[in-house]
Structures are given as C-alpha cells and as structure tokens.
Length: 112
Image 1 (tube, rainbow, N blue to C red):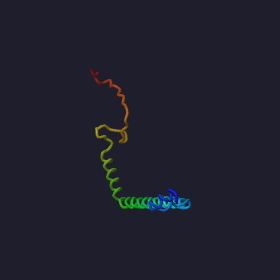
Image 2 (image 1 turned 180 degrees about the vertical axis):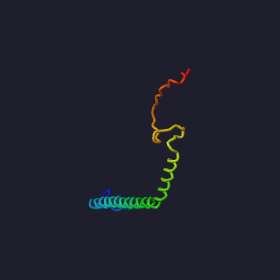
Image 3 (image 1 turned 120 degrees about the vertical axis):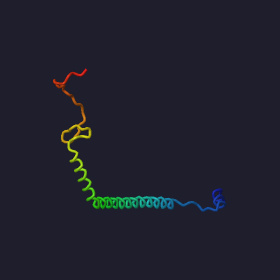
Image 4 (image 1 turned 90 degrees about the vertical axis):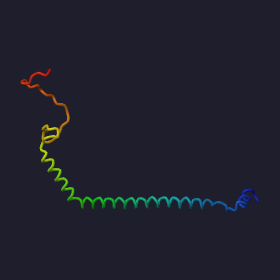
C-alpha cells in the first residue's frame, strides 16, 4: 500500500472525482449561473412593467386633480398681473437678470 492509499483509508474518504466529474461539475455550475441570470432578468422585466402600469394608472386617476391645480395656478398668476413681488413692473411678467444702466434725468438735482 502506498502513502496516498493509506491516507485515504485512514481519513475514511473516497478518491476525488475524475476529469469527467470535474467537467460535469463545471458545466452544472455554469448552467446554474446562466439560469439565475436569466431568472433575474425576467423578474426585473416584470417589475419594470408593473411599475410602468402603476405609474400610468396613477397619472390617469389624478388627471382631473392636476388640471384643477394647473387652472388654479394660472388664475393666481393672472390675478397677480405683471407686477413683481418687489413692486416693479416687468416685461410680460418675466424677470430678466442682468445689469441696468440708468441715464441721469436732467431735471433731477445732482447727488452729493
């Protein structure tokens, strides 16, 4: 008996799988990995479709409420007129940021 056979007999184990067993194990692991990836893609696709359906349902059910809010905001903007909160008039209700150069009025006294 050789040392390897003696070690196997004392450890109570059996010899490891041969080359064919190792190849079968690798193939089974690869198939399991591919199957899990495909399942995750299907689950992700189903969740995306359900999410889009839920979003569409909520948009459909709240369309009247959104129309009322838009109408209320337009009415509030229309009643405010073209006067900004600071009290100065703006062109068509828009505020354009920038610098303003004021020409002195000849009737105004000079500032000291």
